[in-house]
Image 1 (cartoon, rainbow, N blue to C red):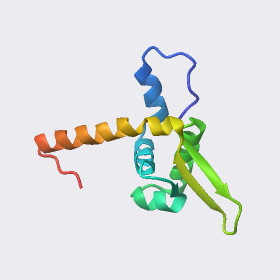
Image 2: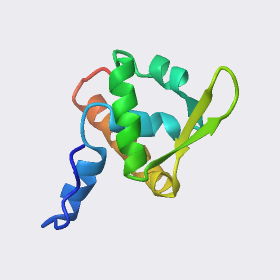
Image 3: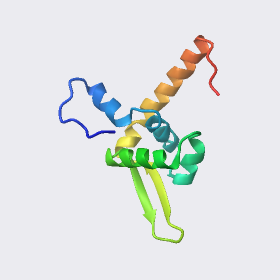
Length: 112
């Protein structure tokens, strides 16, 4: 995510700047079921590299969509969860999943 602009013509453009891309919606979706550690997210997000996951998590945190909690123990324990803004996206993500399943069913597209 590049630096956010100060002015947008369409509200949707701001939303897409915040959550667009291949991984952010998937990360947010997995966090709707609760707090996850980095390693849990990595397993859930098939094909993502550690470096990419790190960048995506930092961008979501910078956008105030997720929160990171660090536990000062050895080995270091870090957990990620939805922030208040992120929680507001839960219904949007649920509706998008519902719509996608309906579209797939009606157009003979398999979702695994």
